[in-house]
Every structure is written in structure tokens, then in C-alpha cells.
Image 1: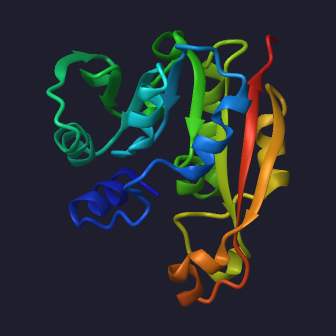
Image 2: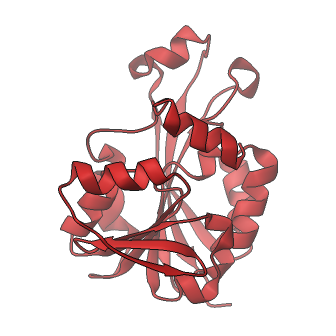
Amino acid sequence: MDRDFWLRRWQDNEIGFHQDQPTPLLCKHWASAGIADGATVFVPLAGKSVDMVWLAAQGHRVLGVELSPLAVEQFFAEHALMPEITESRYGLHHRAGGIELILGDAFGLDAEALAGCGAVYDRAALIALPPDLRARYVDALYPCLPAHCRGLLITLDYPPHEKEGPPFPVPEAEVRERFSPRWDVRLLERRDILATQQSFIDEGVTALETCVYGLARRSA
């Protein structure tokens, strides 16, 4: 997936990944992830996810990053928020209601940008990227999060030859391989969801699971 592909998806309103309600697995497992009260939560490739509103309602500050101007504009409009807009070397910062969305490239963030984040929530970022970009994403972005950061990662897994992503399948072995050098990884739940995903069935996918992982950044 490249920049133009992502921007075109939003321009053409091809955003089937967007959900109108908070992710049930987020609501179920957030409390068990060990996130500190009031921690700032980093949400990469945020889109206009209502999960950000849910996280803010739990008392967290939210820092998201998103490439699409349409996604950022629609997020604040749909929640009747009037953001304050400032500019930095990371992009245009939109702030309102305890939520800050940076209109910019996630790969352009660094340790300074993420220094205040005590948590990370990744539902739609890792699975949006093909294998080469997944490696770059984890290796470049996650090390910028501070020591003792904790979070939730939600993935999909299906036979890769049965569907062309995104979303892409990310098996448990890959999650552990990519994160284990710097993060402790706990599998919190694995759930068969094929029966509820008609679009996958229509494409010929024969097995589909979602997995939820708890992440904990090591101090060294």
C-alpha cells in the first residue's frame, strides 16, 4: 500500500474497514492491557476511527496520525468538534476533545513526537500493510515509543493465497518475530469470525480469525 492508494481509497469512499461503533475487542480487553489511567494513547493510521472517541471517554488523551485530509476532516465533523490547528515538522496538528490528529505520514514521526505516549492501540495499521512495509513500520515506528509503553494490537489471519489485501493476514508467528526483540507479547484472544464477514466469504476465504495481543515495551 502506498500513499496514493490510501488517499484514493478515501477519495472514492472505499473505506469498508471503518466501523461505526467502537471495536468490541478493544472494549473487552483494554482494561486487561495494564494501561495507566490518563495515559496518552498513540493510534497509528487512525483514519476516522470512533475507537479514538471511546479511548478519550475512558479518560485518555489520544494522539493519532493519518495521511488522508478527508479522514481527518470527517472525523472532527462527524463528532461536532472544532479543532485547533497548528503546524510542526510532523504535519498539521488538529486538537479537540482530548484528541490530537496529525495530518501527516506515520513514518515521519520520531521519538520526540511519541515521547509522551504511555500506550499504543493498533487495530488497522499493521494489517493494512504488505509484508515489506510491515517490517519497516514495526522497525521504524515502535522503537520510538518510550520504555514501559503498553498497548493492544488486533490482527487478522487467513490463508494468504485466498485473498489479496488489504487487510493482510498477520499470523501469530510473525507478530512475535517482529515485536519480540523490544516488546513482551501476550495473546489475549483468538476468535473465529469468518461467519460474520460476508465479504471475505464472497472472495473465497475459507478461514478467518482475529487475534488480540497485549504489548509491553521493555526498558532496554
